[in-house]
Image (spheres, rainbow, N blue to C red):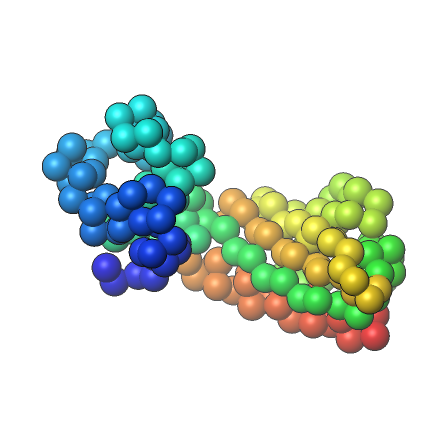
Length: 180
Protein backbone atom coordinates (compact mmCIF):
# COMPACT_ATOMS: atom_id res chain seq x y z
CA UNK A 1 0.00 0.00 0.00
CA UNK A 2 1.75 3.11 -1.20
CA UNK A 3 -0.59 5.75 0.20
CA UNK A 4 -1.51 6.19 3.82
CA UNK A 5 -4.70 4.30 4.58
CA UNK A 6 -7.64 6.22 6.05
CA UNK A 7 -7.25 4.42 9.38
CA UNK A 8 -5.05 1.98 11.26
CA UNK A 9 -5.39 -1.70 10.38
CA UNK A 10 -6.04 -2.56 14.04
CA UNK A 11 -9.00 -0.19 14.25
CA UNK A 12 -10.41 -1.49 10.98
CA UNK A 13 -9.99 -5.11 12.07
CA UNK A 14 -11.66 -4.47 15.43
CA UNK A 15 -14.67 -2.89 13.73
CA UNK A 16 -15.04 -5.15 10.69
CA UNK A 17 -13.27 -8.42 11.47
CA UNK A 18 -10.60 -7.92 8.78
CA UNK A 19 -7.55 -5.72 8.28
CA UNK A 20 -6.72 -3.91 5.03
CA UNK A 21 -5.02 -6.89 3.39
CA UNK A 22 -7.95 -9.13 4.32
CA UNK A 23 -10.47 -6.75 2.76
CA UNK A 24 -8.31 -6.21 -0.31
CA UNK A 25 -8.18 -9.98 -0.88
CA UNK A 26 -11.98 -10.27 -0.51
CA UNK A 27 -12.61 -7.36 -2.87
CA UNK A 28 -10.05 -8.49 -5.46
CA UNK A 29 -11.54 -11.98 -5.58
CA UNK A 30 -15.03 -10.47 -6.03
CA UNK A 31 -13.83 -8.31 -8.94
CA UNK A 32 -13.99 -4.92 -7.25
CA UNK A 33 -11.34 -3.57 -9.62
CA UNK A 34 -14.03 -3.42 -12.31
CA UNK A 35 -16.81 -2.07 -10.08
CA UNK A 36 -17.93 1.43 -9.16
CA UNK A 37 -17.57 2.97 -5.72
CA UNK A 38 -21.29 2.53 -4.90
CA UNK A 39 -21.20 -1.10 -6.07
CA UNK A 40 -18.21 -1.89 -3.85
CA UNK A 41 -19.70 -0.21 -0.79
CA UNK A 42 -23.06 -1.92 -1.33
CA UNK A 43 -21.34 -5.30 -1.68
CA UNK A 44 -19.58 -4.81 1.65
CA UNK A 45 -22.83 -3.90 3.38
CA UNK A 46 -25.08 -6.51 1.73
CA UNK A 47 -22.75 -9.50 1.43
CA UNK A 48 -20.39 -8.99 4.35
CA UNK A 49 -22.57 -7.15 6.88
CA UNK A 50 -20.21 -4.18 7.14
CA UNK A 51 -21.73 -1.03 8.65
CA UNK A 52 -22.28 1.71 6.05
CA UNK A 53 -19.65 4.09 7.45
CA UNK A 54 -17.05 1.32 7.57
CA UNK A 55 -18.04 0.12 4.08
CA UNK A 56 -17.29 3.62 2.74
CA UNK A 57 -13.93 3.66 4.52
CA UNK A 58 -12.95 0.23 3.19
CA UNK A 59 -14.04 1.23 -0.32
CA UNK A 60 -11.99 4.44 -0.27
CA UNK A 61 -8.99 2.54 1.12
CA UNK A 62 -9.33 -0.09 -1.61
CA UNK A 63 -9.59 2.55 -4.33
CA UNK A 64 -6.50 4.33 -3.00
CA UNK A 65 -4.50 1.13 -2.72
CA UNK A 66 -5.40 0.10 -6.27
CA UNK A 67 -4.53 3.51 -7.74
CA UNK A 68 -8.12 4.44 -8.54
CA UNK A 69 -8.31 7.36 -6.14
CA UNK A 70 -5.79 9.85 -4.77
CA UNK A 71 -5.78 11.29 -1.26
CA UNK A 72 -8.55 13.86 -1.01
CA UNK A 73 -10.28 12.63 -4.16
CA UNK A 74 -14.01 12.01 -4.14
CA UNK A 75 -15.84 9.36 -6.13
CA UNK A 76 -16.90 12.00 -8.69
CA UNK A 77 -13.23 12.78 -9.44
CA UNK A 78 -13.13 16.15 -7.69
CA UNK A 79 -10.92 16.80 -4.70
CA UNK A 80 -11.39 18.11 -1.17
CA UNK A 81 -9.05 20.00 1.13
CA UNK A 82 -9.29 20.73 4.82
CA UNK A 83 -7.45 22.66 7.49
CA UNK A 84 -8.29 23.76 11.01
CA UNK A 85 -7.06 26.19 13.61
CA UNK A 86 -7.97 26.67 17.25
CA UNK A 87 -8.51 30.37 17.90
CA UNK A 88 -8.43 32.03 21.30
CA UNK A 89 -11.78 33.77 20.84
CA UNK A 90 -15.41 32.74 21.00
CA UNK A 91 -17.30 31.71 17.84
CA UNK A 92 -19.12 35.06 17.62
CA UNK A 93 -15.81 36.96 17.48
CA UNK A 94 -14.36 34.60 14.85
CA UNK A 95 -17.57 34.82 12.84
CA UNK A 96 -17.39 38.65 12.88
CA UNK A 97 -13.83 38.51 11.56
CA UNK A 98 -14.72 36.07 8.77
CA UNK A 99 -17.75 38.10 7.69
CA UNK A 100 -16.12 41.54 7.97
CA UNK A 101 -16.45 43.13 4.49
CA UNK A 102 -12.91 44.48 4.88
CA UNK A 103 -11.60 40.91 5.15
CA UNK A 104 -11.56 39.04 1.85
CA UNK A 105 -9.52 35.82 1.99
CA UNK A 106 -7.22 35.30 -0.95
CA UNK A 107 -7.02 31.82 -2.37
CA UNK A 108 -5.19 30.32 -5.33
CA UNK A 109 -2.47 32.76 -6.38
CA UNK A 110 -3.97 35.71 -4.54
CA UNK A 111 -7.38 35.56 -6.21
CA UNK A 112 -10.01 36.59 -3.62
CA UNK A 113 -12.79 34.24 -2.67
CA UNK A 114 -16.36 35.38 -3.25
CA UNK A 115 -18.38 35.60 -0.05
CA UNK A 116 -21.44 33.34 0.06
CA UNK A 117 -24.05 32.52 2.66
CA UNK A 118 -23.38 32.34 6.37
CA UNK A 119 -24.96 30.82 9.45
CA UNK A 120 -24.65 33.17 12.43
CA UNK A 121 -21.68 32.18 14.63
CA UNK A 122 -21.57 28.68 13.04
CA UNK A 123 -20.34 28.77 9.43
CA UNK A 124 -19.16 31.08 6.67
CA UNK A 125 -19.23 30.00 3.03
CA UNK A 126 -17.25 31.26 0.07
CA UNK A 127 -16.85 30.42 -3.62
CA UNK A 128 -13.41 30.06 -5.14
CA UNK A 129 -12.42 31.48 -8.52
CA UNK A 130 -13.45 28.28 -10.36
CA UNK A 131 -16.72 27.69 -8.50
CA UNK A 132 -15.25 25.49 -5.79
CA UNK A 133 -17.13 25.46 -2.48
CA UNK A 134 -15.24 26.75 0.53
CA UNK A 135 -16.62 26.70 4.06
CA UNK A 136 -15.35 27.48 7.55
CA UNK A 137 -17.31 25.87 10.38
CA UNK A 138 -16.97 27.24 13.90
CA UNK A 139 -17.13 25.04 16.98
CA UNK A 140 -16.99 26.42 20.53
CA UNK A 141 -14.45 24.88 22.88
CA UNK A 142 -13.78 25.33 26.59
CA UNK A 143 -12.02 28.45 27.73
CA UNK A 144 -13.57 30.77 25.15
CA UNK A 145 -11.78 29.11 22.24
CA UNK A 146 -13.12 28.18 18.82
CA UNK A 147 -12.07 25.55 16.32
CA UNK A 148 -12.29 27.07 12.84
CA UNK A 149 -12.46 24.09 10.47
CA UNK A 150 -12.07 24.79 6.76
CA UNK A 151 -13.41 22.40 4.11
CA UNK A 152 -13.00 23.00 0.39
CA UNK A 153 -14.75 20.82 -2.18
CA UNK A 154 -15.17 20.67 -5.93
CA UNK A 155 -11.43 21.16 -6.45
CA UNK A 156 -10.08 20.21 -9.87
CA UNK A 157 -7.05 18.13 -8.90
CA UNK A 158 -4.31 17.41 -6.37
CA UNK A 159 -2.38 20.57 -7.25
CA UNK A 160 -5.41 22.77 -6.60
CA UNK A 161 -6.16 20.79 -3.43
CA UNK A 162 -2.67 21.46 -2.12
CA UNK A 163 -2.75 25.15 -3.10
CA UNK A 164 -6.18 25.73 -1.55
CA UNK A 165 -5.21 23.89 1.64
CA UNK A 166 -2.07 26.02 2.04
CA UNK A 167 -3.97 29.23 1.28
CA UNK A 168 -6.60 28.44 3.91
CA UNK A 169 -3.99 27.53 6.50
CA UNK A 170 -2.69 31.09 5.99
CA UNK A 171 -6.23 32.53 6.15
CA UNK A 172 -6.99 30.69 9.39
CA UNK A 173 -3.65 31.80 10.82
CA UNK A 174 -4.49 35.40 9.94
CA UNK A 175 -7.92 35.05 11.58
CA UNK A 176 -6.28 33.65 14.72
CA UNK A 177 -3.82 36.56 14.85
CA UNK A 178 -6.58 39.13 14.39
CA UNK A 179 -8.75 37.48 17.05
CA UNK A 180 -5.99 37.29 19.63
